[in-house]
Amino acid sequence: MIHYTAGILLFVALSCLAVESRNFDGGVLKLPSEVSEFIHGGSNNDGDSVGTRWAVLIAGSNGYWNYRHQADVCHAYQILKRGGLKDENIIVFMYDDIAFNEENPRPGVIINSPHGNDVYEGVPKDYTGKDVTVGNFFAVLLGNKTALTGGSGKVLDSGPNDHIFIYYTDHGGPGVLGMPTSPYIYGNDLIDVLKKKHASGSYKSLVFYLEACESGSIFEGLLPEGLNIYATTASNAEESSWGTYCPGEFPSPPPEYDTCLGDLYSVAWMEDSDIKNLQNETLKQQYELVKKRTANENFAYGSHVMQYGDIGLSKEQVFLYIGTNPANNYNFVEDNSLPLFSRAVNQRDADLLHFWHKFRKAPEGSPRKLEAQKQLLDVMSHRLHIDDSIKLIGKLLFGIEKGPDVLKTVRPTGQPLVDDWDCLKTLVRTFETHCGSISQYGMKHMRSIANICNAGVQKEQMAEASAQACVRVPPGFWSSLHRGFSV
Image 1 (cartoon, rainbow, N blue to C red):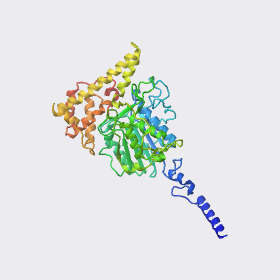
Image 2 (cartoon, one colour):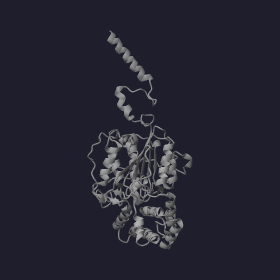
Image 3 (tube, rainbow, N blue to C red):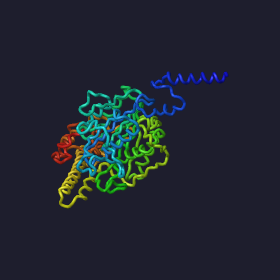
């Protein structure tokens, strides 16, 4: 009788606790059978144990030849959406000139892999066209609605218990990330914004995935520990990143496509996320898998994926940041189940590849053939102009023998690209004033201009050398007359 009474009392006590008691997040106390849901935060992003998940996705390019960047962002959105994030917590920047581009063989559809499904459907049009700006991007990160110019008005209205995921994909160069509008994103400015975000106390931790050439230089020597930020990059501070699923390569896109469908690092983390139960995979584990697949043990067609910031955060589950598709039951295994890429295309050559295949496939004598030929010649002429101008400026400033060595100098690991970022911006604008826009290709020379700053060259000296090297601003499509300035 005593045991029976004690059992009744215990049952009543537990029932009362389940109904009336509250945990620190405001939800009911979980019974043992519900512990797993409590630990993993359930499927609801609001008010659960992981706070609210927020995400900012940004494609920094435009033009059909850069198809892959917007395809990457659209794919990332679908992963987040299937992972349980709400549209109100996902902020998308994309120029949105790909899906209905006259070059697109499937109007209204964007794919990110040869046999992939449409990833464009349902993607929020938060900031498109001329609203994809550095100012809007920084305002969104800081939750500053009054600083916005155009767009949906959505910002990271995050709180101290929330987790933030930022994904950027585009062209880059040492210390700089491209944008479809002027100016570009400079590494020191981005880090300053992240520091301000941390100082505001408006997140618990933040993960940043960055796809761009020399993307390591954005964080190298700039991102300190202690901000609760964990970042991985497609490449180190000195090398290119790579496009994949490109025409003529393997695996290749469907034959009607003459542009790359994705980027190597981006496709690696997203295709892993497509199939995994991310409750059981840590950021560190995903990093290792992506690193192996991106390098491909063949450094002629791959890059070194890097990690920066608070590396200790990599012990956390990927799920905390991007959720997980409840249909995924495949758990982490050390051996990558996804195939390695046999070939890839340097990010900076993907536009050439597009124009070449467009030219090759067009009927002889057709307007399309002539257009593709002009586009190919324009981009090659622009490249030669930028390369030759930078080399000549180096020789004018430092001498024929010493000039090339100064321009190629790479600082030791752990040091930022440049001591004076204002000097870098000033000298870039000085160069562009006389020689035209550096554009997505010319970003490769940002290290050279940084080294000119580090050598103590002043604006007046740079202007004189630039004026001698460039007698006029070229009038082509890539000129500052059409593309604007990078600063």
